[in-house]
Length: 193
Image 1 (cartoon, rainbow, N blue to C red):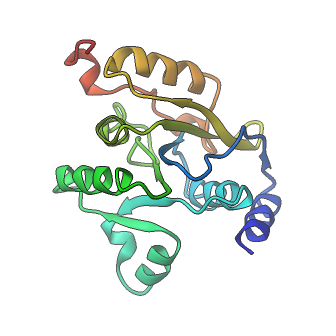
Image 2 (cartoon, rainbow, N blue to C red):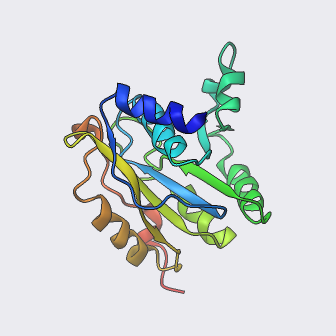
């Protein structure tokens, strides 16, 4: 049923799924970028569901208030308390290490508008849990989206982010001028392991 709904959502919004293979039965962190519009949410769920993937996703805690909180949780939502991000990372690492299938969507820009850089939670969760990062995208100008390559974090933040920047260099988001260049504050603070 979700697969049919996912295809319907993509068709209604006139987007095409041009993805590589979706992760199957593994734990991973899905990077959703560029994050530039409220349409990112239904489009990424449409792509995931049309590929028989029901991921969890992170959202600001205000999304989980009444009257829609129950719906957001039913759709896989995990509330984020921005005042205590460390607890969230530890909880997500624990879930990813549990051995069950676990796909978590994170929009590292953290906002739909242009930001200074990305938040590093996606990287820290994947690295600490020992799971791959799967790059996903929405591209407004071509009205396409999908799953891209997998990246196993090496601990060399700059080198890993160079791979991520290369992938997203031609992806522009639903509202292109709002996209944030992929960069992490930790790139200057971390040396290769």
